[in-house]
Length: 289
Image 1 (cartoon, one colour):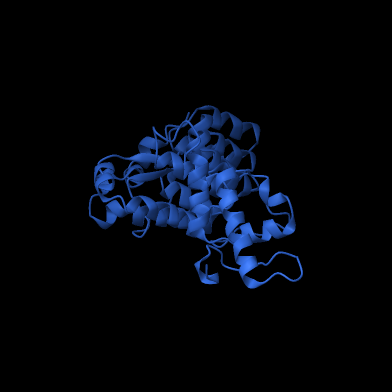
Image 2 (image 1 turned 90 degrees about the vertical axis):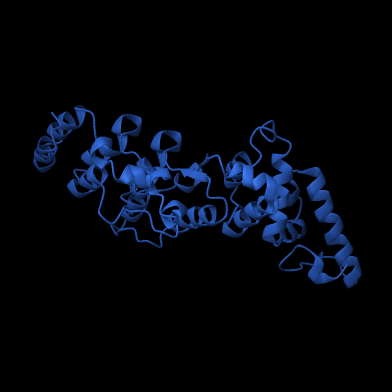
């Protein structure tokens, strides 16, 4: 086997002196075969050499490994695609390239693909992307380039361009993503989530309660009324590209902002307790009594 035929980006020879190139290639080939057969998550931790080789594998190999792992779960038969994508996104090694390699695997099955195009299924946005969000200690604001927004955009873009019947669900886990983004005051992320169907009333309007506790009028107003610029970008929403926005849940929700914001009366009570007069007046003007 030639070096460029192995599914690795950087060849890391074993730390054994005197090994020839052929011996090194055979070592790597056997190691990758054992890795796919064993499906043992602890194998990369055996030694630095094994960890370096497995870490340098390309996106196709990582997608293949994740698929082998998912095929051993009871969900494999019932949800071969959406379940696999959800499963893969739960792993830190699932980058944009790995996700694209996963979806390419199903695009090749044309007959099956045409049948599944008639159905929509949801993709759960992994909690791991948001669990470390917190307000910045230096008081600076988050930007468009701050995690996890760039990776989220890539997830939406890859799904929309390949298997657009798979719709990412930003309200997974009772609106956990929006709650964490609000807690951290990550405004660009909040705008993105709202643009793609995030519901601030999830979990008893917890995100809005956080904004009131912060006494942040602008943040609360953003959650309630959304923003004029929150329309999903055309490179994210395939239905908008095809001129059929009625089939797109996020696009439809953006047109129903007033219906979405039937919030709970205890928001006003909390604003009174926080002595946030500006927020009180705003809520009263919105008819929230």
